[in-house]
Length: 246
Image 1 (cartoon, rainbow, N blue to C red):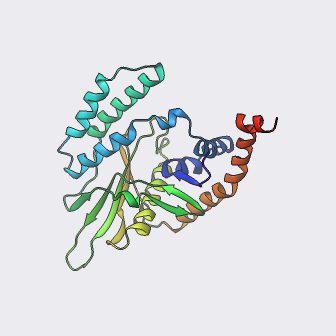
Image 2 (image 1 turned 45 degrees about the horizontal axis):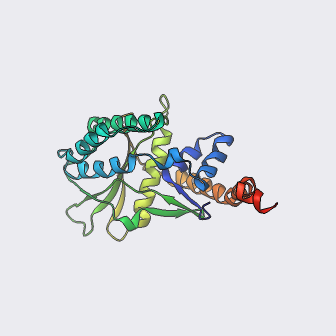
Image 3 (image 1 turned 30 degrees about the vertical axis):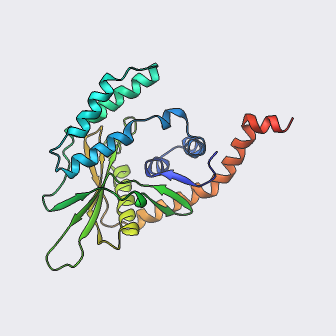
């Protein structure tokens, strides 16, 4: 069981809008990740998406290669078959998204050592799909942003007309850029966006972000405060714990 307080950006945003029961489940799953969370194929698709974006959305060879791979792969269970179908669906949506990229932007791979940030005692795994830079005459350093591809088929970032989930996620992304990439340039919220792949919709960071950052920090503090209590309860329920008490 994991002791380090570590959560993905996706789950932090879900936590913000979750019911009390779901909030407990999010922390429990972070402590004991179920198989259905660990066997997703989305990380490979996200890496192929990065190459696609770096090419200016022209080179689809990485995505096509994965598409061929998954089509040829034999499913060993109904669950695995559904995972493969979701992966193939995701690849088709990545190609269909109208990525809001500018001709003035340089798209780069995200350095592996800069995938996370600490908020309120919790390590948040942000892992941007790619880093964005824009050079402007009169400025010594570039403006910097990031794009994150979001694969939440059953959890869209827009609910009817409310896109606060997407804005909060993109605002977290902007905060990450400011915290981890400040030495390379100035973080620009207009260059920080999350693409909800299955919905084919992009959400940009808020230009006025102070209150949303306070909200994110409060959520992280709440998770940190509850983490050990939930961990201890899970340990008491575990078979190893019951065996040791005999």
